[in-house]
Length: 292
Image 1: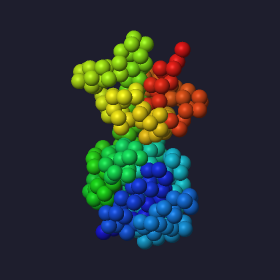
Image 2: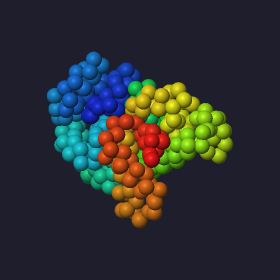
Image 3: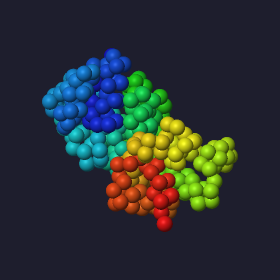
């Protein structure tokens, strides 16, 4: 078993770190939240600082809010971790930051992977996350058993930054498709069409997609969807906006034409401005169905 340091014990990071500990690894965790550290201490070792967390780590996993946090934390990790430790960042950040930090790590003698996830808090708790991984082949091979303790699907997407690229492209699809499904159900309401009847047709025909069959935004057809618990997250509107904003940043930098991605970004930005940032992103249906 490996000695793993896990930095960032938030809604996603805490259950991921716990799953590593349950898999038998020696896990030391660190977070700025005392409450998160206290909860993690039931399963592993709570550190008092980043240097304390990584001083004897073979593998360092980070799950942080944004690129600026990854840059700052990785600078401290690289300064204090043992030579040759494998660095895995599972945060969702901009591609440029992922590539810059990987280059910095490589120059300091550390192999690094960007390994953002899909699957939400439920997937983190269940250990069924999808990992989209960018970085060297040898580092990916070393990381696979570690990632397998936290996820079910692990895809090596390419070189440094490729994991982040896959994540933002995937979530741009998700954000756009959720709005499309929500618009369809809002239209069905206006036309007097029952939710279940539309679901029965669309889920078996050309309208079928994950946003419909697994996460239906309208109450009724999918009992486990957030729509049936007053759109409590799940995956919050604010987090969807973060990922869509990253997609648009990447589109601008690369010269890609993503008109629907831009429209979806503006839609979720409006929901946040209206005070719905903490709702599940499938709240799109309710916002559209209540629009005058």
